[in-house]
Image 1 (cartoon, rainbow, N blue to C red):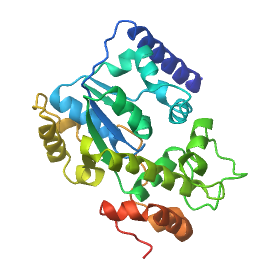
Image 2 (image 1 turned 135 degrees about the vertical axis):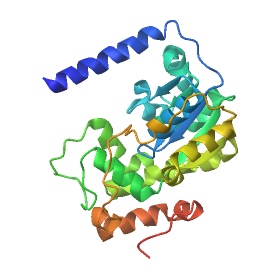
Image 3 (image 1 turned 90 degrees about the vertical axis):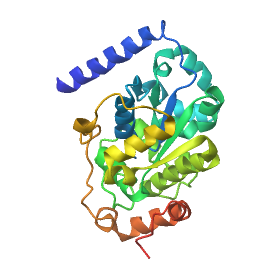
Length: 271
């Protein structure tokens, strides 16, 4: 019954957003927050919008898998989704991790937007993703394992979707996905402000204030009582990487991500 009520609530919310789109006007100069899933995009987007008194959209379900994959393959036009779902693109700040993987289409449609890219250490990022879907990190593979993984999540765990090969496992798939997200930032880095999640954790208020200053946003709301609000389920931050992934999967992850990790100051633990 509880699951049914959750689904009804989600359906009603999406229906309301669909109806609102009939009357909404697309904001052609929004702040767009990008970054891989579970890299801190929700917390930073919420706090930044609240700090500046900005209207916000946090997550755009019409872009979730498999839609975003069809946009990546050129089967669906991103601009047409914006036109049909105007409400989701009408606010001052828009945050949707799926748009990270179609950055070229997003920038083409919103050339006057201001972009923020959130990056997080891939080991913490991938551990948090696996925590979210209740999958351990040390297994050699998921074939035959009785995990309740949604079809959209299984697509995320497919290495071939993100530039890997079918012989690689689910941790390697997520490592390729992290690479793809960061690669899109690197290609468009002149258009984006880089924000490291680790720096946010070290000084949340100072981080948000500094980010707002870079964007020319003045403080309109005191957010100090919101700094420790948990916007997403908390992962196993206190579990060591080698204990969560096991040595083999940890080395596989670091091998795939090593070049970008080095570029952004994340040292390899396996060495």
